[in-house]
Structures are given as C-alpha cells and as structure tokens.
Length: 472
Image (cartoon, helix red, strand yellow):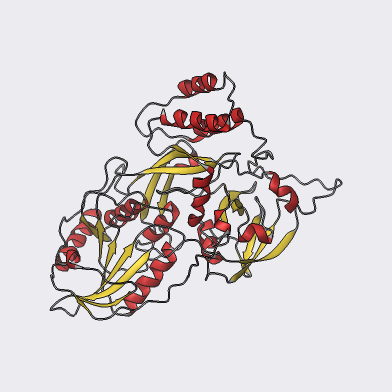
C-alpha cells in the first residue's frame, strides 16, 4: 500500500489492509476550514447551560441561568403602556452564586434528577424513593458549600448510574471546547404559540466573544451574515456561525421576545482542534485508491473537517473509504448524528432515542442525499463508544458500511449537563439510543462484521447481501 497524501505524519498502516508493505510517498498538510490558537483566554470562563461532556451529550438546557451579570447587559425595556408577553423560556430567577444557599444548591440538583433522569434498567430510582431522599437530605442544615457538593455526589452515586455525576466549577468551565459555533453560544429550537420555530440563545459562555459583543441569554437569532434563518435548524445555524479563527461574523438578534433588534459583529475564537486526520492510499498491485479518514472525537469541527477531507480524497480519486473510529469515545452527539447523515440516503434512520421526556422520543432520519455512495469500512474496537457507535450502527444497519475490528463499548445513554447556581454542575442520564435495527446500544455494543481486514471484493458482496435482505 502506498500513502499518496495525508494531513498528518503517517503511521504504520499494516493493520488497515492485507498488504504488509507501506511506502510513504509524501504527506501534505491540507488547508482545513478552521485554525486554532493557544492564546485564548475567554474559554476559561463559565459556561451557562451548555450541555456537553467527555462522552456524548446533548446540547439542551435546563432552566438557563440569567444570573446577576445580565443586569449590566440590559437593553431598553417595553414601556408600561405596551403590554408585551415574554415567552416562557424557563429562565431562572436571578441569583448570584454567593447568594445561593447550600440547601438551595442541593435542592436544585435533586430537582434536575427528579425531572429528567432516566433509569436505564438498573431499577434503583423511583419517584417515591427519590422524594424520600430529598426529605432526608434537606431535613438538616448544610453548613458549607463543600458539604453541599459532597451530599450531591453521594445522592447521585446512589442512582447506580456511572454517567450521572457532579462536576466542579472548574470541570464545567473546561467544556468550552464543545462550543458548536466558535463565538461562545449554543442554540436551541424553541416553538412559539403558532407552531413556528425560533432559534434562541440558551447557552452562553461568560466573557466569550458573543457575550462580550452584547449577545444575551434568551436572545433570538434572526440572521447570520445577512442570511435569514427562518426554516433552518440549530445545527445548520451553528455551522453558519463557524469560520476561521479571529474572523468576524455579523449576527442579527432580537433581545428577548419584545426587545430591540440589533446587528452585532462578533470575532470568532475557536477552542476545538480538528479531530480529522486523513490520507490517500493506493493498494498494492491495484490501481484502486482508498481514502483513509481517522476521526478522533466528535467536537465542533468534526463535521466540517470531515466533509473537507472526504471531498478532497474523492477529488483525488478515492473510490472507497476507511473511517477509523477506534478509540473514539464520543463527544458531541449532534455532531455524530450529522456526520452519520452524510453517508445515508434521504429518509433512512440514523438512530432512535428513548427517554422520559417527549423530546427524547425521536426517530432521527437523514434529510438529504449522501455526500458519498462509495463502499465504506468502519474500523471499531472496544473503545469505540457513544457518538461513534451512533455513526457505526447507522452506516451498518443501512447497508452503507461494514464494521471491522472488535465489539464496541456499548455506551448508548444520553447525558445532559446542567449548571447549578454556584457555577458547578451535574451530568444526568436523560435518555438512551436504539439503533436502526432496534438494538439497545447500552451495555451491548455492536458486533463487527469482520475481525480482520477483508478484501474489498468481500466488502462489496457483504453490502450487496445486506441490501437484498433489507429489501425483503
């Protein structure tokens, strides 16, 4: 096998193909769509309402905090003669971290679990037992904040869910690397009273680019660089907001439901680094070119950089692809879902979600034609988890790829991260994933089609049989 082009120092590829010979011809660094810098300071600040984590999490919010800081950002309010009904965006009452009592912090964590937690088969949670726990805990005075945090840790540990946990203020702040936009906001689609969807700022990094420029919690985003956002999803708009580091994006926002409309210039400051490594390979004794793409995690740059890599490899003659998800523990769930859609035909199922809340009862499907239709091998191992398993199962169950390697990890739970009023947070399991073939991912993982790298002719035959069986 010859490596004809790559965007990183080549490493031994003998495990990727039957050939035992690898000849490094040359490696070039491609112009990916984004760059990063180590000179940032704003990501070290607090994240409000951003729901992400070290494994795959969902970008949602729980009672997004307005906090006392919003008072100095306030714009002009409607006059007393104008009645303007603000939408119920589940805003928390303003409360400084220093003013939140220890008991209030513990109660806040208890309420989050009570409203959102999904017991994924362990049967340790019930409304009755959880209510009793609240009464037991709050029956006595909690003297220190450290004691309050310890109580929350023990309370969550009692659920028997390894993914539901307490995170400190420092850990919460580090989640800035999952910012989807590069300007320090996260968006959520909020339906209004007539069924239309508005895009609201329900995640905001304090002292981040958007916050510094004047964007506020709860603002509605109307335009990005003059593009009307009506009919666009939160993920599509997040992609529009992305761009090279330190460039400027102009966004038009409406402050609140009744406030003024304002155009704001925001300088992008990216935290995430590209997770995509790729190279073009030529098989020994064959004129076939194979595009190898390694995806290390699902962060804010994953989808855009993967598209760049796939298109470049395809333009250079790749007629088949290897997607390496080994040791990829996940990242942003939405990034994983959108990447899976790149390989699927319109109408095909990416994943099913199940949860207590109706927002987690979904059949997520691809809406457009695939980026590529060439055969794909997905490399997996025991550390392929969460968002990686969503991609692997979506491609496998829709007969778009064969899986090669080891059984995957089996992490099919959805977590959301909720900020508490003192800047700490809790990560809570709120749902689970079921594959297009109706396999519960959690605790099971996905069995590969091949343990060793197959010949491409075997890949083609396997996918052909899969299509035949699927069509009945």
